[in-house]
Length: 471
Image 1: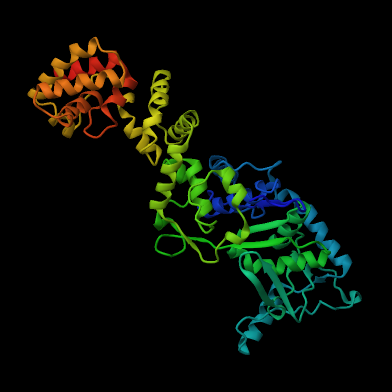
Image 2 (image 1 turned 90 degrees about the horizontal axis):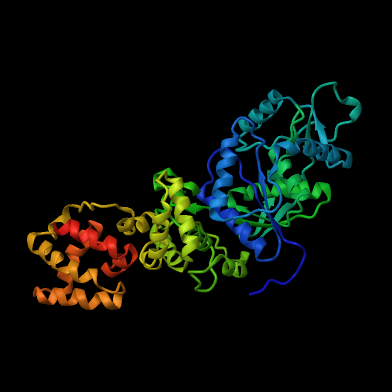
């Protein structure tokens, strides 16, 4: 599916730096990235750091690390919302000049008293009606004032949403939103619209927890005579039990998934399919996802996190990965979880073993577990189960095997008849010989194929390990 050229597509991801990058935020960023990249557009990143109490540089760094691990690259510099506060205030004053906003001198106490009086009369929620909305400027006191938007009093505001459909909000339920506080600081609702407009954002793809904000934000666009972007509010991610995803479900941060050893390509594929579908496509590359991804494929119901499906998807991507790229990501995983780095000889062995190791592993811990035979050094200490396979009879058989291996050509074709003959000569099947061989080479009872392991560690090391075990 190719996307027809239209006006330039610009999407954005705009997290608040108050903690790590949540898996739901990671998926929102991914949807924005796929939509823009598949249409030759731009994907921008803005940090909404206006909440100075809760915003931290550490959280910003964690968000950037999470996006980088997921493989989501953004265009241009990261924009700080806080640093643009003068521009936000300028727009509030422009609205004042256009007559789409007004100065409000009501104090917090007056507003609270107004609401209390309304509620006493039985109103469930009292929309504050400012006495200053149409006041004569000659009556203005010399006092601090907030700037409020003149919201329409009647009729309705319609949000044409690409995911949620047509959403209608009665204007009578919306108050005249403050856009600039009396201390001169802009509100978040204004900042978002000004930033999206100035950054040229054409599509606002975000969580449906922002759907209520869209009506107020659309009014700001209208008040400034700006083009309203395409809205797409996506459902949140729930845990396997159908409840909102939280710590009790396990990992909620993107970096937790890296530490659990999921490959990034598998994670991207899984998150793309979480709440979005395209025919029966299940396993696909990011390039394929960019071609397929559209807003019409996003469902309205919350998506449920399914760890079995995630592992299955990651297993496919492990097997599909190029060995050099997989080794690179494996080493990044080892750094992330403070595992000792691979030595140069170990890297060489790992690269040689990846063609068979990656076929049955779904995560990096699984891959490392299967690769244990090439990371250990002699003498190999067998675990309890493997040690049982090294009884006196088995050790005798290994002893008789080593001289024949010393003169063997080190290929699977040459090794197979030697091992089969030794097993037959001792009246056992190959399966019975494999157990002591696994114990000698890897120190475990469950390992990759004996031939694969022997070919990777080489003739000298294989024979030395067999000698150690049979002595």
